[in-house]
Length: 161
Length: 118
Image (cartoon, rainbow over all chains, first blue to last red; front, side, top):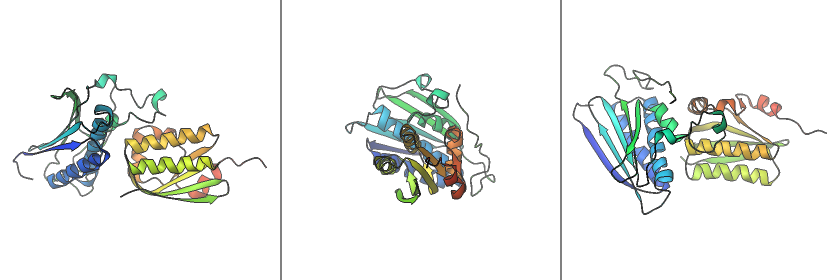
């Protein structure tokens, strides 16, 4: 991977197929950037969850709305933005899926998984008025990357308070 | 890779061999249809064999939980067999490992179900 920053921007339809498409695109970028297999899995899953969140919660599955995906590869990290056209939300309002009373909930684990799998994660107000998920993962340092992705990256999930 | 499901009976228990990805869309829908179909037939003792399922997203997790609660409400049980590492890790970080009975041996899994009183 060279030191030049790379940028990808895609406008996605609000449909299930967009989830797979976004995952595929980001997986290819992550592989090309030198991430190992485990980190590619975590990045792919996080992109899936980000786009599912935009599809279902943000855009309410309304086909006239769009999902905006942007990926930046900087010299030291991969940064992913997922923006929807919903009304936005606050992270503090998201229930903790690990709380005893939420363990049998059939939804609400996407944010948790993104936080667990990425190095940095935040939700900010987007320019569309919707929510913009911003998440990043540090690129493997030269010589630390291994085929199974164990080099240099923490795999321990962490849970918000 | 889409999801495939094959049912086989072991007495009053149904083993569902799944392969592919349980994700938003067809995968989650097929799992829901399979479990609901078994419940409609009165078969509420279900063992999901996930040996060939190497990917589950939050939608798939939700469907597993939904199936579990639906089966429990019919006085049945839903247990998991042969988790791949990724699926096992996912259930651990979401604390669902504490909810589901998980087995690595099919015979032990089948023996763990409560047998109907004769």
